[in-house]
Structure formats: structure tokens, C-alpha cells
Image (cartoon, rainbow, N blue to C red; front, side, top):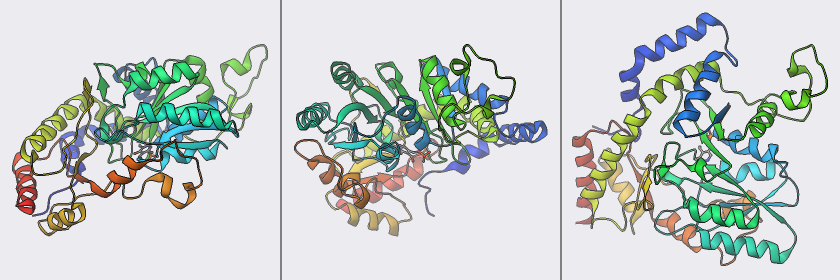
Length: 386
Ligand SMILES: Cc1ncc(COP(=O)(O)O)c(C=O)c1O
């Protein structure tokens, strides 16, 4: 029998009655866009992420774009980010006319290397063509980046810090969520994410009310928001007073209603994922090149459980014959993808990123992975080696 890579059905069986009731309530209300569940979910999400405020939007990609737009990042600006990430991270940078600068990652955590970041910033400053503005740290595979080190660099250089926590929402470092260090933390509710909905969705967490207001404007076609109305009266819907060029990026009320139910069991699911991760670490020790290393003091939400193997493709093929699905995140780093190949790279290039792309393999991971199924996976990997 084959094993699921991510078993969304198991979670749904658990909370189906609540989800059905939540969806029915939205259908009955007719408030399909920006209904009361959207604000309720934003408040609950902010509380979970130790934030004052959360702004929901249409997906985790827009969630990264919104703060860039609100900060006025644009042509001539450099935005530093890893290349070992999903396309969405660098993609939004050229959207606003700015330039992504690719920075290598640490070999053990796969997250942004603070020393390489410093070198990349120094390189951009020395060249003098771009102005360093923003760093996007990614909580890859679910674990927090090295925020204390990255934040210190951002403070020294006067840069904004975005935590792209699409994979890591819920992760902590020393008990603190990434927003403790970042100006904003963004996330995705794509169904396969640890906190996913039944479609697309995303959010930005921040402690800054002015920034929240600006992003609220950008997510609804640049509508006028409170600060725009100071000293003037407008007696119509503020959606029809457009004070900037924005976009349409709202979280559907139905998705917010679903997410309220999913958030209620999220912490428990994070704990269950940790049990699965511990079982893998124990069972695979010595049988693969590396099992995941989490930063000291860090708690991962285990969006992915990524091992390294010298014969990664051979192992994946072997597991497939046993009905065990795997995935490679990411086989082609962003800095070598054709549309991104001409963007600058930090000094020294990205040798770690390029090496990792050859060895990483994600194993089935979800909170409801049974001990028996997991044992089958572990034994199949051990057999491949032996
Ligand atoms: C690291 C990272 N950033 C951003 C995103 C974008 O999220 P979405 O697919 O909701 O636009 C994703 C997810 O797919 C991701 O993995």
C-alpha cells in the first residue's frame, strides 16, 4: 500500500464537521469577501504568531510583495535573499522593479548564511549601482533562520527584514516567533503548508499599525485608508478613492472560516510533527548523509523532512518501487533558473546551494503519519543502503 507524502485527508476526517459548519455559516451569511471571519482569523493568527496585527491576503507570494510595495522598494534597490527557496521569494522583487541579490545558505540548516549576507551587502555597496534596502530570510522546510545574527546585520546596515515564513509559520527560536526580529513575517496557506487552507491564501504579520494600513490599501486596489483621509471628508466607500496603485489580494471569507478551525488544532499538529521528526532522526541515524539539523534553540514546524543522500535519485527511485513518495526541494536553485540567471550573486557565489540541490530528498511528513508507516519508510531507506 502506498503512503501519502502529505495526508490532508486524515486532518480533514478529524475536523470535517467543524469545517462543514464553518463553510455553511459563510454560505448563509453571503459575506463571501471580507466577511467577519477574515478579521476574526487575522486576530487569532496575530495572537498565535506573537504579533500585534495580521493582514490576510490572497497567497504567500503577495504577502511578500505587499510590504515591499508599502515600503516603496523599487528600481535601484537591492533585496537580499537565498537562492535555495521556492520561486516566490525572489519573484516579487522584480515585480516592484528592484533587484534580487542571491546569498548562499548554511550547510547544516539550509537557511541564509549571515556571513555570506554581510559579504553580499558589502559587495553591492562597493559596486555602488544598487542601494541595499531589504533582506528576505526564509524559514526553509519549517525552521527559523538565524534571526539574531541576520537582524544585527540589518540594524547595522539600515535594512528592513522580511521573514518569509511560508513554510515556517509557527516556528520559534528561543520561544520567540520570527516577527520578534523581523519587520514583517509572511506566510502561505497553500493546502500543503503546515497551516494550509482549501485553496490559496496568505498573510503578513506586523507590529506596525501604519504599515498594516498601507498594506490594507495595497491589497484592495490602493483604496484610501485612515491616514489618507486625515483632513478631508469622503462620503463614499473608500474603495472608490484610490490613493495609490494597488492590487486585488484578499483572503476569501470561506478560507478564513476554514483556517479558524485549522488554527485551533495547529499547535497540537506542530507537536505531532515533532514526534514524526524525532522518529526519523532516530531511525535514520548513520544511514543517510545527514538528517535535518535545527538551529540551537529552534523549534521547526517540519513543513518538510529533508534528508541528504549521496545517491539521492537512486534512493528516490528505490522508495518509489516500495510505494513511498518523495520530493526534491529544490532541484534547480533560483540563481540558475533562466529568468533569474542575470541577477547578482553574493561574493563567493553559491557553492552550498548548488551542492545541496544534488543531495536533498524530502520524505513523507505530516502530523498523522503512523508509526507503522514510518517504520516502513525507515526500513526501506536502511535496505537501500545495506
Ligand atoms: C518559501 C516560500 N515562499 C513563498 C511561498 C508562496 O506561497 P504561495 O504559494 O501561497 O503564493 C511559498 C509556497 O509555495 C514558499 O515555499
